[in-house]
Length: 310
Image 1: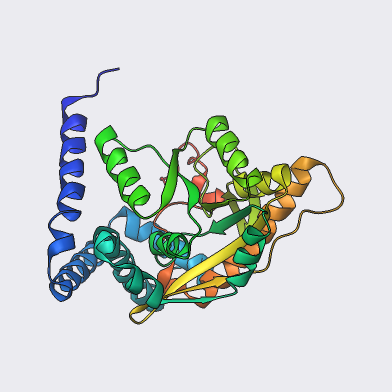
Image 2 (image 1 turned 135 degrees about the horizontal axis):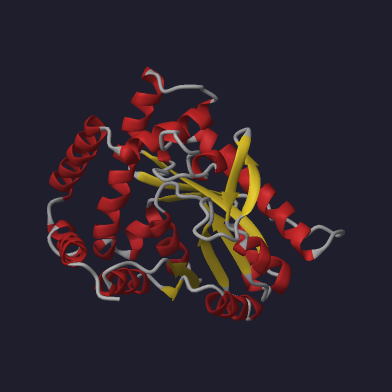
């Protein structure tokens, strides 16, 4: 189907904006670029658009509040500044040398990853939308462990190609998010003793698993647990945040495959345990959870007749 002229124009503008990011922004003086991105974040916060309002609803869940108040508003501003930093670093990461990527990373528990991979066992690293997972991937590759990940197809195709080229330049193998085909190739990599990294705190399909998350039902992808069950790879959650000029990460304990139960139930149990780990990491660093989309089932459900959209 031919796309409408406004949609095609929007795609072209978006592609041009990202192209500018990877050309102009990456060459700007870092201090000036950081000020500019912070200013954009603050304007977005003041505009209080739909993404910011959803972010604040999400933060209410994290903080256990019934409604947005001054504390939530202040926190949402910090989140947007953290998210702006993420995008600034995405555009500038190709300029960072290996010494900076390794030297500014503060990681605890990373030996769990390396020990499994060095023994020939694949590892599924499950991450939330926290901190800078692009940099975390660059760090893992710089440590000598290139990995496989997936990316949601973007429009226009040229924009998707830019993101693939960016991630491949950092040492990642990028697969399009296309269901069984991507799953099979990731399983192959894991059986070969390689790592797979997946961001799995928001479901992009109708096949997600319902989990308890901050006291309510949320929907998360089952893919990381399913890969571990199918291949015998270690499922290891990782949470990320910022510490001043440093990037920080905690590599958590492996989520084991249950001894009992059908495959579907094992996957559900492991996804729930991963959600518990994410819950603790987000509660500790809510300002670095960049979730401006719907996560909880109550938000995902369409409004009833006569009811205003959520």
